[in-house]
Each structure stands twice: as structure tokens, then as C-alpha cells.
Length: 241
Image (tube, rainbow, N blue to C red; front, top):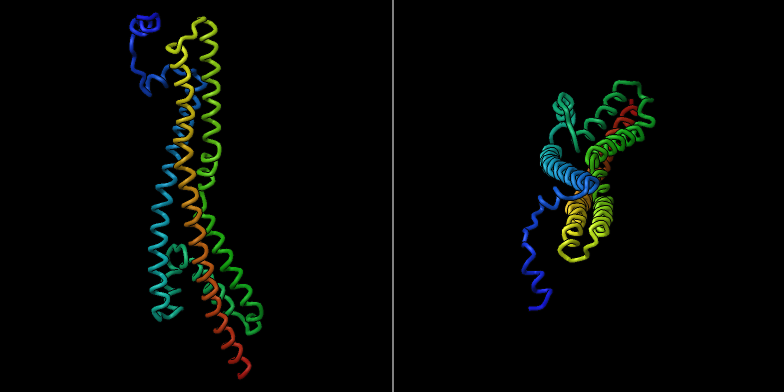
């Protein structure tokens, strides 16, 4: 039997678990790991919250469109929706009708510029809705871009610590080197574990936001056209009177 076989037979076989790698890592590497794990939990909380929110928004938009295009009176629908908190297309409808009602209560010359005011109110409502949809998505983007680098920092620090231990013990056998390097690489693995789901979710949710923004803008254009026709009819009636 050669000396390498004797050394391997004499060396005790120890199982290295994920918990043992974390527990034996340097304090800096532990902080990096805990920070990445906390970031991953935060990201998953945001993902679940956004999925539930977007599902509710889709249902509310579909329900509102069914009511709006069913031929219901705009005044009746406004009276119903203005009495309770609204979001999505309903908030655009309430904002446009509110501006319409204010001008209707004024003098005839208040119709001048009404179309521009209604469009501005609709644009502001769209911006508020999109801002609500995009809230916290920056966290996903930050974790997706910075997570691997933070994990790499923990890996570099762990490898430096392992090499210092090797130099101090003056033992370069694989049994001495492997545990320290494994602990260091564990930080990179956690960084990827946090970054990959965050990146996928960010791209998916950002695409959902873009689709919802497009639907809001399309409804705003259609609703603005309806109110524009109402303005023209009132102008004709005022001139005839």
C-alpha cells in the first residue's frame, strides 16, 4: 500500500453539512450569508405580495370593464364608485368624471380646456397606479444585480481566511484545504440562490406592470374620447341656446 493510501485510510471521514459549513465559517462570511438569506426572504415576500396584488388588479379591471361597457349610466357608475376607495381603471374613471363634474357645475366658458384637464387627470391617475404596481420592485432588481457580488465577497474573504490557516498550520493536504474553500464557496451559492429568483421575478413582474399600464392607457384614451363627445354636444347645445 502506498503512502497516499495509508494517509487516506488513517484520516477520519467527516460529513460536512450546510449547517456545519455555516457554523465554522468566518464571522464576516457568516454576516454575508445571513444578509443574503434575509434578502432572499424579503424578495420572496415581495414576489408573493405582487402576485396576489396583480391577480386582484386583473379581476378588478375585468369586472369594471364588464360594468362600464354594459351600458350603465356614467353618472350612476360615478355615484357608486366615488363613495368607496377604488384602484385601477375605476380610479381613472372617477378622476375623469370628477373633473367633468367640476366643469359642469361652472359657467359655459369652463368647457374651454376641459379636454386637456381631463387628459391630465387621467395621466396623473395612471402614474399613481403604475407607481403602486412598481413599488418594491427595485428591491428585486438590487438583489438580482448585487447578490452574486456580495456572495463573491464572502467567498474571497473565506478563501483568504482558509489560506491563512493553511499557512499557519503548514499543512497543504486536501483534507485541510477543502473545508475552508467549501465554506467560502457556500457564500457564493447563497448569493446565487437569492439573485436568480429575484432576477426572474423582476423581469416577470416588470412585464406585468407594462401590460397593465398599456391597458390603463388604452382605457384612458377610450374614456377621454367618450367625454370629448360629451363636451362637443354641450358646446353645440350652448351655441343653440
